[in-house]
Length: 519
Image 1: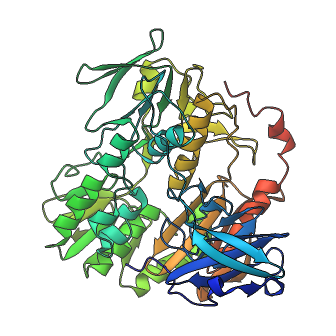
Image 2: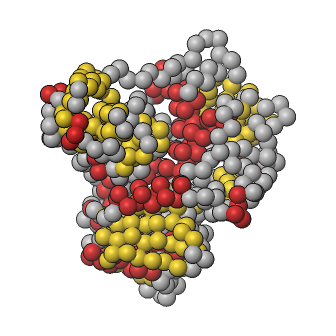
């Protein structure tokens, strides 16, 4: 897998650079020895940081400077130019930084600076935070608590058998065979141990005692908490039809799920993917990379039309058809037998692998039993606090008042969950920081990336600039004239600019006075 790390190019910055060659607000790609270095100027200050995003290696010189930060063009991670710190997901690790020295009108990049150390707690521990869920939100919260100095006990409870991992890749490069499993874990077990984070794997919470502030796990163990974060995510919607429990029918939510599909794909010749969602179509692309014949079944007339609109949805269909995928749209599955997927039209599709991707539902049982307020998810205020002031929620199960639409929304995006985990951690520490990030996700189809910023559950106008079929376009989704979201293909910098524009836009009048009123 190509991680995008650039080979050393451009000027050797240790030999000096005339400052006149770098205008205010500009970046320059150079190197110091074998290390690629990004030089960025803000006013009279010049910064030198690593040139590759620590998430997937995106080229930061193709990104966007915003104040004293740089944003990655691939997946919108953001880094401090001053410290190299990863200030926005999906990046977890900081950039290397170099000392910059100025002599008259010439700047020299000197030695690499020491990285910022993440503090481990000093005994005795004071206070306790329990995090339920080892996905994007839970892991982000645990790391943020330690990075920002929380000294108390942190317990991360995960129902998964594996350490927190890169879930988006389960349907992309890992499933396609382009990324090894070593690349999937976000951290090692030793990482959590060294930071004093107790990691409980294969563990599920059975109940929450709100009055006593205790969580009981299914194995009977109990954990007291001062603050609790619910980040248990969502569960796949499962088929309830004859044959849906056959062993060759798979779902994709966990690393174990992806492993099982890969194992079956090693001997499969023909697969049926049920559902033309982002996950379903990414699975289709990954299975085609393994030279498996793929058929996609969905009730939609156009794949992804509800989210992306007809033009982009039609383009995605043609893209998959060009790679050999067969579509059966406008129909549903009636039954599955030992060798076939039987459609309601009566058509039978032979298969030796079936993957179901028909959506997810937030995992609400625990919150409901605890008596927390629900609203098609766990209802939280703008600080991600539930109806219990000692319990927060983040990620796929949380519905929050969105500062950009004035509506309560629940978003099933990896980057949103990571960013919410960070905000929840800060607020459990008493920071009182509203969650106001613009939602972002990306979807890969072969070598084509679709980037999407904002959130448009409903729109009444789509404006497309450029030509979708040429893989170079920007789609703007509006409701009543207001921009809600922007999707881009082949225009990464425009996606970053659209994100910034949405961030800087004033709150809508309808929502500004009610953003904390969902509870």
